[in-house]
Amino acid sequence: MNLPDVPLGSFDLSDFEFWTQPREYREGAFKTLRDTPGLQFFAERDFEDSPFPIGPGYYALTRHEDVWAASRNAQLFCSGKGSNIGDLPQEMNEFFGSMINMDDPKHFRLRNIVSKGFTPKEVARVNDYVTVKAKSIVDGLLERFPNGECDFVTEVAAPLPLQIICEMMGIPAGDTSQIFNWTNVILGAGDPEYGGSLEALMTAALEMFSYAQALGEDRVATPREDMTSAMMNAVVDGERLTAQEFGSFFILLVVAGNETTRNAISHGMRALTMFPDQKSLWFDDFEANTKTAVEEIVRYATPVIHFRRTATQDTELAGVKINEGDKVVLWYNSANRDERVFENPYEFNVLRGTQPAQAGFGAGGPHFCLGANLARREISVMFDEIRRRLPNLRITGEPEYLQSFFINGIKRLSCAW
Image 1 (cartoon, rainbow, N blue to C red):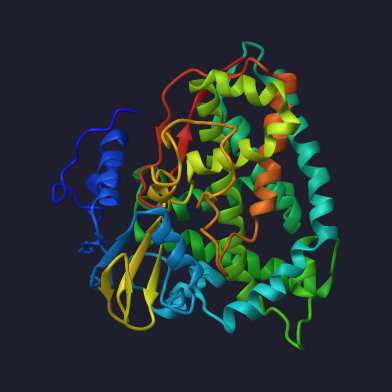
Image 2 (image 1 turned 120 degrees about the horizontal axis):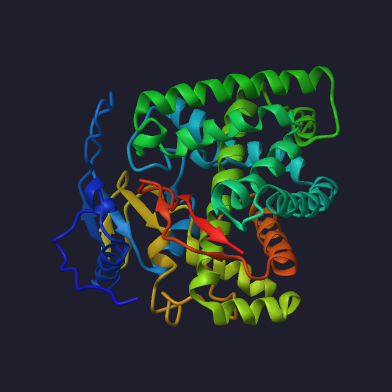
């Protein structure tokens, strides 16, 4: 990728127009930030129809070293004041983000309880289902598209994580399309196609929350063999998950477990098409190269672009004094393109080593993605099925990207085989 020279001061990460610019331009801007000593401060912007006041601004962490330093030190850079850039009332933070917007001991308690849904028994049951579902997706392609063309996102990348998360949670198959629509609205709030407003986001979130509460209460009354039952009936240190806590965690789990893996698979298939030599390297020795290939897909895609933290006391980072209460934004997309860590970072390399680690799962610390291993499993199994049964599958058009500065999403992506 040939990056343009984007001078410091000529762009604003808080300006939504910046995120509509060509990707080469944006990558050039982040390279400028990485190459500029210290940290750059950006003012916040007002969102149309937002009832909340404009925040005080934030420091942009764009280098791999700085992102990991803040992520690993949760006592100094907390999540409890919100993981989105803008400030929300704490009740709304926890409603939308559940434990990703909490600090210990509240975070530790909730993560301990919900982790009962990720026991080896639960994960083993899901592992088998991943293989079955990937096979059925390819079966469906061959049956429904005899001409060998379809939309990759809709027909391949989206169904796998969506149906797996619904299976895990015990959600009826007839409700999956509604879950899919809710997640699109919640993470696509800045995209006119999905409502493009705070009102649409709130409506979808409240509907999903009510659905989850009813599901959780049902599993308390009549437990089944699913993750919802495991979580709702788990007792840790004498405490159980409330229906309200489950409702918020449900939003986090379903949205994160669906959208992020969907986009990793979509970006991964596009990368394999753009770098056919890498596709051959992986597919010709699949088992040996799967671990590094999956990590490279997540690095290359970086489905979640950023999260925010807040300084809990005066400190210093990258030679810049940061005061208690200052916001820092961890730009994972930039950390995963840091030339100081990744050689030729704009190239897709399935043999790239796993150390230093990519930041696509959250850059370490107590908020490291709880579903990382499930996501890795879904990605590897889906591409294994493609390798064995559709080895000539390729992307045939340019992606239609989600309009978002939070999720690196692809809405549509034509493919053929």
